[in-house]
Image (tube, rainbow, N blue to C red; front, side, top):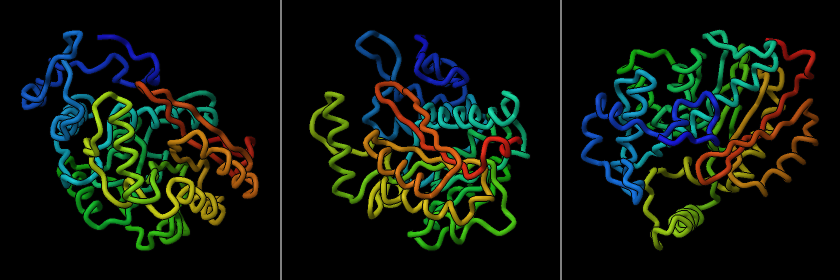
Length: 301
């Protein structure tokens, strides 16, 4: 298997997918594999069933999760890329911990828009032992997340955000203290924009003009009024209200061009520090925006 140097050095998926090992835990995956033009085992990434089965196999094999089932229309996140975000967050916290990656339940993380799959708390708890609280606006997603916790005998806090315009209001309590927040925001401003984005993706991959959602997703996961910039702008504004209750606020940003208006908002919010952390993953480059109201001298864990 070829090493994928663009993934984080601690990412368990840097060397690609070990299909024989995955088949041991998830034998049904074998029937969904095919051969690439170079003769290597792979899956048809246009097939939602194959994508979901691969991700389930990865979680069973590498993260000791026996159960990972959720509604068919819910977003099915790609595990390698999601885990990369967590590893870079661990590096960010290590800067305040003498260069040592902090592990254990004393590290508390808030996952905004945790979704039906609960992917960040599941993988973050497995990789680092952190304590997670997941927030979502959708009752069905939270019900799915609770079932995943129950079936895997995991303790992950879950809270419902009742106002879709709010990010931290109503879910961050007066006695809460978090080391970090993380979020994979809705990227698009409308369902039409989401479909257009999907068609562009397939055309760029040489797969023709189609709008099949191979990774699934629905409103709240793929789009919201104002799109990505509007969502993160609300996040920045509301982070000021809980500035002393979190060491680092962070959020994925899909488009490079969105960074300029967002960093201007952070300057107006008078944060102590802003970071943009680049993450190259496969054929694309992702990134997350991080900000803290704590000056460096006060960030020690």
